Structure formats: C-alpha cells, structure tokens
Length: 258
Length: 271
Image 1: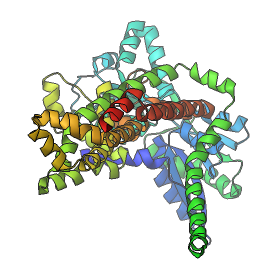
Image 2: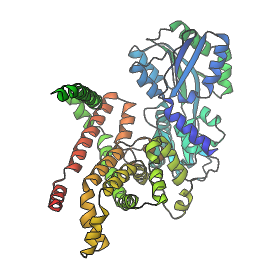
Image 3: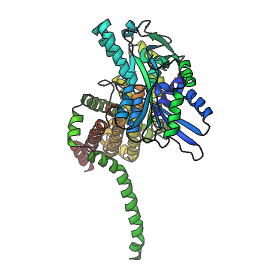
C-alpha cells in the first residue's frame, strides 16, 4: 500500500512532463487537466471516445498553474481544465483560451492518515497536528486553503490560524502531492478537495464547517492555438452533458454553481 | 609535412566537436543572461522568496559538503588502497544515487527516515525527526552528491605510490603523519575536483529535496525549489533566480579550485 503511494507520488511528479502524441489516421485531442480531475477524467474520456471513435483523447495532469504556464509557453494543448476560475480567466484575458465555462464543483476537507496519530476529529483541532501540508499559493488548492484559514481566523481567532500556519511543513505543487503526504503517513493533516479525499481509501476525512469553506469551481476551455477546435468544442459540450454530469456526480463532484 | 597534412582534418573535426559541446553547455546560460533586463534582476533580488532561499542553499550545501568530505575521505582512501572484493562491491553500491533519479532517492529516503520508514520510528522515539526539516535537505544533498566526491577522491588516492608511504614510515612518520604529509598533498587536486563536483551537485539538488524535505519557504525551500515555485507564478522571476544560482555556482566553483592558501600548500610540498 505504501509502495503504491510512493509510486503514485513519482507518477505525479513526472505528470507535468509528458507530451502529446501525434497520430495520422486518428485525431488526438490533447487535454491539460488539473490534478484533482485525475480519477474522473479517464471515465469521462472513455465515454466520450465510445461516442467518437475517430478521436483519441490524451490527458496530461498537473497543478492548474503549471498547465497554465505551459499553455502560455506554447504547449500544444487543445483543452484546458482548471481547478479555479482565476487561471482560466488569466489565460482568456491573454487570448490563449476561448469558450470557457464552469464544469463542476466541490469543496475542501481536511484529510488525516487512517491511524490519525494527532487525533484530529474536528476542524478546530487542526493545530494538534505536528505536520500540516497544503498547496503552494499558486496552485488553486493552496489558494483555497489560504482562504479557509483566513475565514477561520475571523471566527476561531487569529491564534488558531497562526498556529496552523506554523505547522505547515510543506507546500506542494498539486493537490495529489498534498494528499500523498498524508497517504504516506508523513503529514498529520492536509487540506484537499472533498473529491480527492473520497477517491482515496488511505485517508480519513474531517469536514470543514460551511462558514469557513469555499466552493471550488472547475473550469474548462478551448485553447486559441488548437487546430482541432471543432473536436475540442464537442468534448466541451460532452463535459456539460447529462451523462458527463452523472460521471462527475459518481466521483463526488457537484454541478457548477450549486 | 605529409604527417601534418594528414592530421589537420582530424584536428579540425576535434575542434568542431569540442566547440559544439561547449556551445551546447554555455549557450543556454548566455541566453538566460541576455534575456534578463537589469530591472528584473533588481526586482528578483528584492523578492521575499529570494534571500531566505539563497541563504538556505549556501548553509545547507556547505554543511553537506563538510559532511561529505569528513565521511568520504577515509572511505575513498580505503577504496583506493584495498584489493578486497568488499571494496569493489562497496564502490558499485555507493554509485547507486548517481544512476537513480533524484525523485526516487527522495521516496527511498522517506521509506528510510519517514514515520513509517525503516529507521524513522526509532529516531522519533529518541526525539529526532528528519523529514521536512533543514536536516532532511542536508541528508538529501549528502546522498546525491557524495558519490561524486568519493569517486574522485578514490581516483586521486590511487595516484599515491604505496612505496612513498613506506619510505615515509621508515623515516619515522606515524601512519597518520604519512597520510597527512605525503598522501593528502599528492591527492589534493583530485580531492578538490571531487569536492567541487559534489558541491555543485548539492547546490542544484531538487527532486530528492522536494520529496524528502518538502517545499517550505525559509525552512526547506532551497534555490532550486524557489525557482520551481517562482516558475509557477512568474517566469521572469524564475529566470532571475536561475541566473543568480548560476552566478553563485560559477563563483564558488572557481573559488574552490583556486583557493590561494591551498595553492601555496601544494607548492610547498612540490618542492
């Protein structure tokens, strides 16, 4: 189990490096997707490809900010799926992405190792952790975690937020790397998306009160440079269709805007 | 004459090949320098991530270099002088971190010193925590960089003739004195090359540090990690950080090979 966690950690680290492949007969659609979509995207792709046998979909997963950077640098992506609106908006404003739309939503939870050595049962016990892991301020999950702590400090006191921030041992570049530190048992607690917590059987889930929580919205758009705009548009339409929404729901996502 | 005429195309080819490689190695850094306006440099140096990361990098790499030299010199001496099978096997084993990707080294270190690792729980029982600390940064650097020093040092020690040590001993020198006064000075240039290689490798270390020590500004975020983080926010900032790291690297690599005190030391012994 630990080996699997270690292996997935390695995969995550190299995920940002994989390129897109070209094929002559079949069209390959390159999708750059936020790490938090790692489990749901393959299911979506499978159904889409079933309906469009002429299209192959190759997905690259990484932190949204890394994918945004790669698109800014001219990476040959056709579709970008971001874990927040800000990165999508930035690309759209710079003329790199068009036709963006909200896709699905989730919120944040605290994950703890199954052994839960720090005995964290409630959010206000978060400071009992010796080691907390969050995302960097640039990756959406890190920015959301920062918002949660700021909101919490207004209610639970500035000391609580300062205490929690003091215990942050590492800031990871995508949500799966954040979760992996808890799966390995190296971190006592981490702030991740609810959907990432639900998709792992190696972590326990501690809810964050609604008063401090945030709605994390996933956005999707077509890149300006894509020579496969029509197919990319069809993929976007599929992602908003009832069958796709059913798949999102099965993975714990809510529909956008609810 | 025919001999010269025969050789010149070969020489030309050699120059061409060599120049191609030099260009390939130097050009990217020239591009980095050219693409950065001075105002960016000033803004980068004033960034809150910059000073703590640079300071941490210098502190941890000098610590890891010291540890590497202290632990690695006796090992290299043994590897150079022993003919045993154990020495040959050891030589291959200590090269493992060179061929294994640094990220794998990071995971392996977690599996060793982590909370569920081989020795992590034992250390934790006596109050020592390694992962996600400055100590983890140093450990990761020692693991990935020391093989370079040990290899170079062992090769340097192999140049020391055993006869010279025997002569020193017959002239009344103790084994320690013979090592310090005869073997060390002869091997010194090789040791310095090894030390500078190891130091450079430690300065650039990224993958193992990221996994084993984490990425925490001011605590475990060394320059390469700061560059990685900056890259996610502002590519120009990352370029400035990279330039500074490259410049620091050049200065220290030059310094370590041309320390005046060491040159005097070498000169005296050559007499």
